[in-house]
Length: 152
Image (cartoon, rainbow, N blue to C red):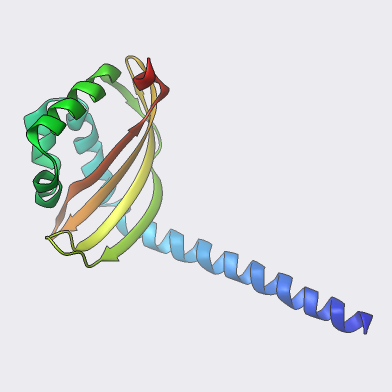
């Protein structure tokens, strides 16, 4: 009886290890597919968005995002983010996910998310940027800046 319990426990542990290995390999495979396209785009987009100029930001966002945000809300967002100051340095990009979504209202497509630490004049931040794949390029679907400096 004791041997059966140990055998069952061993099979369960081996199954979990196998699952984690498969997830790791799949994640590496998916991230490598976007390394040569998404990261160069982010290298240009993040510094330009970080100038905190509304026309520049609008040029990078997807049409569906721009349709969902009013000019007043965009002004408020730009004013709040400008408290970070100029971009000093970007850290190492970390692939987060890739998903395909079917959304009404023009938001359907493939979305790639990266997390990157950044240093601005007024503090450190963590950026989470979701890109929407469009033909042979991208546009910014989400730009999330998380920093304690915004609370000061």
